[in-house]
Image (cartoon, rainbow, N blue to C red):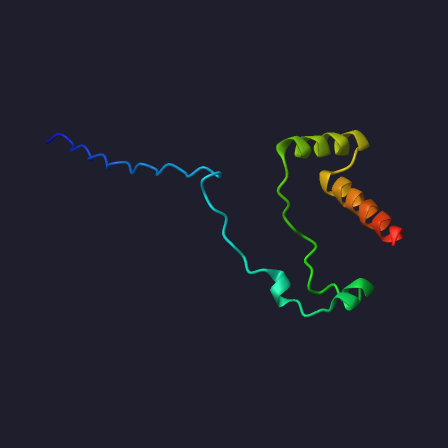
Length: 98
């Protein structure tokens, strides 16, 4: 019986190095503000929230991010709830000054 032939090993494709997040530019989305037709007086009444997703991205210093996380943990709440409450208090108190 002839010896069994060895299968040739296929060359392994090298993975491309991933670009770091700092070098990669984020994809731009169309500005939602351009789509809105609500006047400022209607926005003040809070008539329609259909144009708002309830989400937005904020860039902030790492030190502030850490401080917010630390405060949220001390309060025993999520970062999202802590920031939402802080913003709500700030906006509510700004409205009282008028």
